[in-house]
Length: 66
Image (cartoon, rainbow, N blue to C red; front, side, top):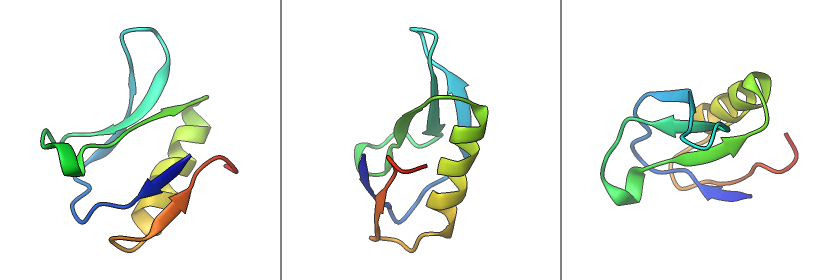
């Protein structure tokens, strides 16, 4: 999965979605900065959050190798 890091990421957290799967989401409602990334487990979600926080705004992240 490819993600371009938005300028504003807000608070990233792992949530259980309606279908029962886990996803990394942020608390921003506007479309260009909204993030929803499915994850396999809590550890995988924490890895995704750390990778997003370390990246610079506008940087392209590849998340399939986590």
